[in-house]
Image (cartoon, rainbow, N blue to C red; front, side, top):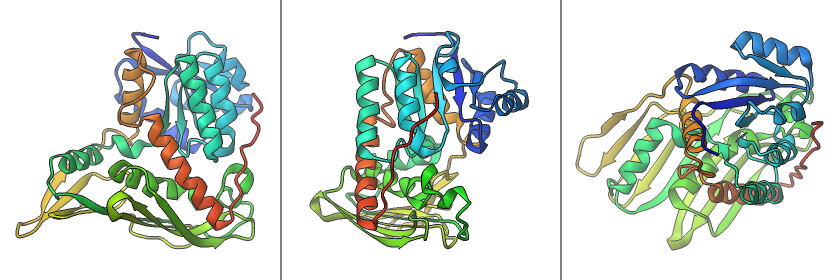
Amino acid sequence: MAVDTVRWGIVGPGRIAGKVVRDFAHLEGAEAVGVASRSAQRASDFATEHGIARTHDSYGALFADPEVDVVYIATPHPQHRAIALAAIAAGKAVLVEKAFTVTPAATREVVAAARAAGVFAMEAMWTRFQPAIVRLRELIADGAIGEVRAVQADLGVRQPYDPSDRFYDPAVGGGALFDLTVYPISLAQMVLGEPDSVLARGLLAPSGVDTEESVLLTFPGGRTASLFTSLQCLTPGQARVVGTDGWIDVPPRFHHPDRVVLHRAGKDPEEFLAPATGGGYFHELEEVSVCVRDGRTESAVMPLADTIAVQDVMGLVADQLGVHPQEGPAEL
């Protein structure tokens, strides 16, 4: 599918969707034209706030809208699989909010459906498109720190236990894993590739979701990633990539940084400023829009193989922690 102006539909008009949609103001050749919610009032309120022309009171109605090219899916994690499969079956390209699904099997199912249908699909891992992270990858590729040996990252928030809070509700994919841990795992996979072993230890809330975990990934050649996430304590949210000739710091918060700092032995630190456009979501929206406009079915920056690899790691983490996420049905 090659189009001139890429027309977007929004599924799940909540907090994150509101942030994402605001960045369309910075984007040329793409616009949000429709929004769907099972609550007609919620869809109407969102459309009014963000200047979106059409509303739908079911997801299926949005998928049937011929004026929509791409569907951005921002519902709770367990609904991603069913909604993405329905959108793909309708021939729509999809941008699926991270975590892509809550199980490795579901991720493979969605990827297989997109490839079979020949439509674009991508996980909305905005970190990979942040200009500072792009610079990080360039520095690594240029050999600025030699051979990369390790990744270290943390990401924690203080979210006191409340069984009614979405963070602690297993029915909506609560817990640290899908909201927080996905970020450092994706960073480590981006830098080091697929791990050959995963070791996870952590804590569970009374509701059964994970509240905190330490994850050690090992990679071929003895390389490692040491990751920590928490819903119990606020952490700096920083990352470091260590190589044989130096290291690169990604200051807080590493999943949407505005700079990276290169440290090389015997030299002064070098800071590379690279702020994001808008709220930082512009860059992933631009990537999807360009890919769809050009008729591509995957992003080279966030390929589906990487999403599968990250979901496989999360699946092993869940198993070791004793978390049992379930893909949920979605009323289409």
